[in-house]
Structures are given as structure tokens and as C-alpha cells.
Image (tube, rainbow, N blue to C red; front, side, top):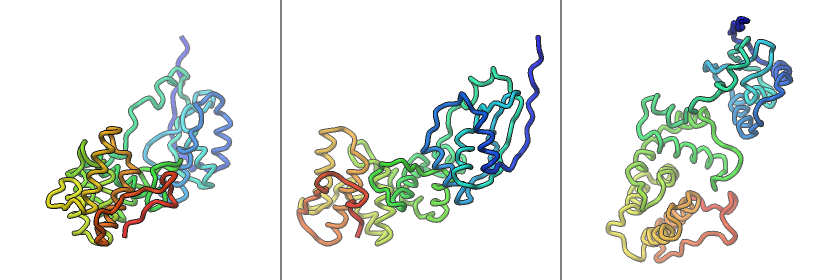
Length: 271
């Protein structure tokens, strides 16, 4: 029985030219997922890419087994980054490559000792998108863990928003991501008022029927009856409308959404 090849491991500074050469040895890999390449490339261009132990893998004959998205990102970004390279793998290992459970940003936050990690991850994701003008939760750009981590470092106050959201969210109310992002946005104007407002949205205590908060709660109930779960984009827009109306002292305000649907251009802005 022939002996199997012995793998070797080294760290290589992979340039765009090297990446292109290695990609030419990739005849049978999976379909390229362009949003993944774009997200890696953004991290590389921003200087956030890290040598984290993940490997680019080659067979004993030099065929690329794993790493095509990272290599395409190097080419796209024009950056040279360090990679751990494993060569000399047997072809029979291919079914096991990249087959483990993918770690989420929530998982990473838990390992970092954060609290309410699912909510914090969701709120950071939406906050990064909002800052980039992506307000409707649609589009091809998905924030990377490194981008969300940088946002958390730059805006530590968002932890308080996520904590409040984890406390207020329920099946009968708004999604935690909406509560958290709204608190983060509203608190930039008035943190105390933001907390009070969202607590009243959640419980309705002491709110007159003419208050926009009551109108929002009624709208949420109707949407729940129709479809079960509140659409995140719709919930966010309605809550911002109610906040603006409440802050300006409007009574029995109609929480209307733009005709033809919400877009990044016509999305309401907190005031």
C-alpha cells in the first residue's frame, strides 16, 4: 500500500500575483460567493485582516483544496497578506475540508466575555449597515466580524442599547435588533428619553391613546395578527416615525410609510 504524503505547513506573504497563480490550480472547487469575497477584500483594504490560523490547503500534486475566497479577495483588494499554507494533503481528505460548524459573530462575542451576545451581534450588524447608508436590511454588503468588532470598539455605548433590547424584545413586540438600533440612534439625541420611549413602546404604561407610541403599539399588534413576525425594516421605520412624532408633540400621528416601499433614500431619519 503506497504511503500517504506528509503535509507541510508554512506562513507565506501572499501577494495578488501569488494568489492568481494559486487560483489557476483550482479546477474543481465550489462556486464562488461574491459577497464573501467582497467582505474579505474590505477587511484586507482596511488593514484589519488577521493571521488567525486558518489555512490555505493544497494537495500533494499542488491542487488548491481550500482558500479560493480568500485568494480572490487578495486579488480584488490588491493587498499582500500573510496566510498559513498547508501542502501535501491526500485527496481523500477533501470531503472533510471546511465541513465544521461555522462560528458566528455571536459565538465570538461569547468567547470574548460579552453579555447578551445574540442581541449585541444583531444590533452591531444593523448599526454598521446604518452607518453605511444601508437602512433597509437588503443588499449584497454584509458586515464582517472584524467590521462589527471595530464598531463595538469605537462605540462601546452600543452594549447598553443591546442590554435594553434583550430586556424589551418579545414575540408580541418588536425584534431585539430594532429596539437596540433605535436606542443607539435615539440616544445620540437624548439617552434618557430614548430609554423611556422604548420602554413605553414595550409596555404601554401611562400612554394616552393619542400618543404616537400608542399608534405604534396598535400598528405592531395589527402587523402581528396579519403575519406573525414583524419585518425588521418595517418595524425600524415605524419606530423612527413614532419617535419623531412623539418628540415633536404630535397627537394621533399617522405612522405612514412611503408609497412604493422603503428604500435607503426615503428611509426616515431620527430627529
